[in-house]
Amino acid sequence: MPDEGAATGARGVPDAVRRRLATLENWLNPYSWLVTALIVGIAAILRLVGLSRPKGYIFDEVYYPTDAWDMLQHGVEWDAEKTNGPAYVVHPPLGKWLIALGEKAFGNHELGWRFPTAIAGTLMILILIRVAYRLFHSIVLAGTAGLLMTLDGFQLVLSRTSLLDIFLGLFILMTFATLVLDRDHYRRSWLRALENGYDPTARHGRPRIIPWWLLVGGITFGLACGVKWSALFFAPFFALLVVVWRVQARRSAGVRTPIASGIFGDIGYLLLSFLLTVIFYLATWTGWFVTDTGYFRHYREANGLSEPPILGALLNLMHYHHEAYTFHSGLTDRHIYQSWPWQWLLLGRPVAFYWNGNGNCGAPSCAAEILLLGTPILWWSFLPALGALVWFGIARRDWRAFGIGTGVVAGLLPWFYFALADGRTMFAFYALPALPFLILAVVYALGAIMTPPSGVAEGSARTDRQLIGTIVAGVYVLLVALCFAYFHPIFVGQLIPYDDWSARMWLGGRWI
Image (tube, rainbow, N blue to C red; front, side):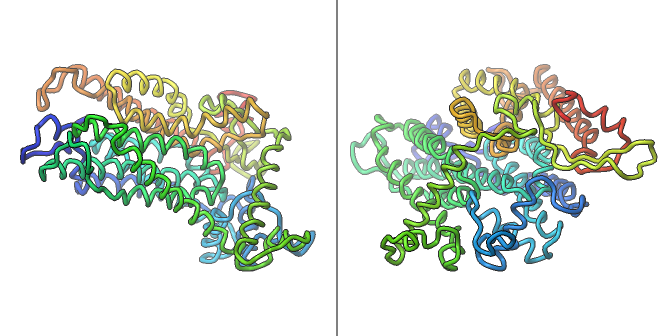
């Protein structure tokens, strides 16, 4: 994984310190943006072409697009059939407002309610490529990350279906991107301070570094929480990531006590960032605040309690959150397509979003299905890639492995707890926020086998190990592409002969 960001020019800073604090400087590399544009263009075509098919609501589209349309009319979710009043819903409103933007632009039909998710899915790929370029300083590896997500059926299906999870995944990935940018900014600021004569062994007076990107991360994280509360799983892990990366930067700069020196500033800025999270999360409830018709909007007044301006509304919203949390905690009803977290990476129980056994495809019997299934070769490589991530991360003490692994743990581990603690009903699409990190783990492993062995100077002739690693990586990506092409008909609901559909059910009843 070549380090293109190594700084040059002494200015009184030892070369070893400069290398330790080096970050990617050539992020405007035109070739990297050319690769980004090419892959994002492919991703957009795959996600937008035929977006209006199939017709009608599929799977949970019976909830979110209808809620979104009602919000355009009333400002809040509405129950027109039973009460002709506000509807009780258990997810925050931002994801539905984003769907409503598509319905406002194109109308209350399939293109309108699916267009925003297609855009969100495409933006995820754009951000993943740029994050990978920041992490690996390699155009090849960044392009590989974007291509793997482009060719993943799991992400494709959620990009073409009007559910909330693709928005959650987008904002979580955006938040991680801001943390990577904050790390780079913090290290560059330390390097500039050293170049300007700062003494890192001084006991007092640390450089003043305002973490603008960390504050932006607080905003994007608030938007993630405004889509689904499960975003909160990432909060402690991302906070830990910020602290560890900052301590490492101070150690690299030569600070004698890198943990104690600066830790209060780290925590203070994290709290400020979280304050922005709360503010922007509450902003996603604007429709509920201003309409006076939202569910539980005047709960206290209706129950004989005082309801002062502003504070009363916040207390009513707290009650709403308590009721919704109670609902989620008690949701243990069996569902034919539910699955457990330990099944997700193995594709143990995908979700059928759509099925149609009618139609003429030129065969005696035909089938059209949309199956929420990850591209098998890609998904079945996640576990060995995670093993390689741990191995190389420990052996190299690599900050990138730590960052990627933290995202995987935050996206998956809490679901194991809830599965074992209360047997809550779960579905495979809950894993979507962890997907970018799983793909980065694969790319990290591919990069590791393509890296020159220890002791080989940069610029030396390509070694046999590098050549073999490059061939292995190329063959792997080709196999993923072929696997995606084979399963593509059941990612988009294409009508095919029944025998062809059956041949794609590799795990038999588990996939039916």
